[in-house]
Image (cartoon, rainbow, N blue to C red; front, side, top):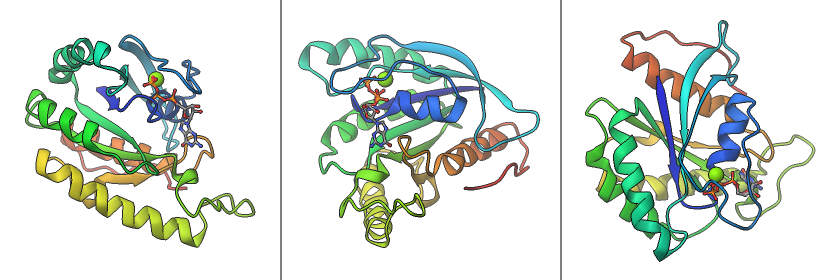
Length: 207
Ligand SMILES: Nc1nc2c(ncn2[C@@H]2O[C@H](COP(=O)(O)OP(=O)(O)OP(=O)(O)O)[C@@H](O)[C@H]2O)c(=O)[nH]1
Ligand SMILES: [Mg+2]
């Protein structure tokens, strides 16, 4: 099974891959970091599943970084998307600008195969307003929980005109920095792959 991770530059694609697999692919703090498509075989360690599911992962350079990189990257996405069994679209929860995602999705949705579904991973959940992560329980504060629910609905509304592959259950909030919500992302991916493989088995736990 082949998973393609797409999203805006710096959205947290590589960090999420690392969190789901235990890999240590390079991430960057301020500058575009994944500059070429990276293809790696890895085991999904979230949620824990015996035996662990081995998948092929395509990490991609982020769109929206610059006018100079845009057309090259778009062509790379067009080339790889027909080969993907599932797409993890990574979007940071806190910014308010989704035009680059809309443009990319409008351009790329028809490149995906008919049976390919999308997980919308809403990363950086720890940074959404009111930015008061509950350090005691290591999870979003009640205010952040509300903001994440609102933002999930907002994202669904923003993305839905450009794809019919998304419903409310496909939008999953998570934080790679806090290792929160990653089991739910893994669970959603596995459900999609199970469906593709023609099984309805449910596996693993949810954090
Ligand atoms: N607070 C917080 N920081 C995160 C999270 N996910 C990623 N980051 C940080 O965001 C920055 C960018 O993360 P990357 O994983 O490199 O993002 P990317 O989408 O792969 O970036 P490109 O490869 O440049 O497109 C890094 O400093 C990460 O540590 C998160 O959930 N919460
Ligand atoms: Mg990256």
